[in-house]
Image 1 (spheres, one colour):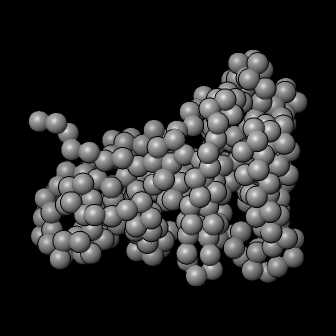
Image 2: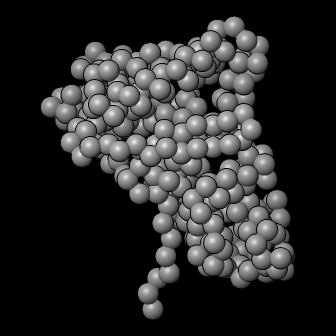
Length: 292
């Protein structure tokens, strides 16, 4: 049995005799494999070569870890003919990351990766999740995609540590808790602005949300991030925020499509960050058996 992460240039092999030990360097692979054989294969080990590749760097803030877990779960469902629906795949991926591997974080990334597209997600106190697909008209989709400038700050970070700091701040109440309530309110406002294609209003909400996010913990932003934001905003971007927990990773900016090429050049020349053009996909996780 072999695990391989091609983007990390890591590979490890094990005897196919039972669960993969905790000494495995590829803990996401280990978590998925162990849960699958325990829950769906009666504890019987499987001789597999599990090979993965992730385009985004570790600590990107783009939910790449959850997307990887979701993809591996879907692949095993295909291999073992496990009849799981989208909600079940997302919940299983969440359980593997948050319960089995004890990695702190929310549950939105697993559902976003599983369902794909534009969704308004509701998370209940009883762990109930409802994913409401949003019908975005093609011209709104295209305009939003053309207005997004994704930028790698050049610094990866460990989201769990930042989330721990946010949790401690929120538990204490005060400003951090108020900021969390504001972020929740702005999610509703962002949904309406998106449905109507109001990019300018989306930028206002994004700007307000970034300021609220920074109030949840001192670890969310850094001097380097603030310098990047100053450069991008003074050169024409409407608004921006760090993706994921913050602290580094990728920043998402909204900018007039006509100004985007020039702004990308400025970022490359005046900062240590790297601008990236991204696409907004409408499909979620997909698995298949290779022909032949």
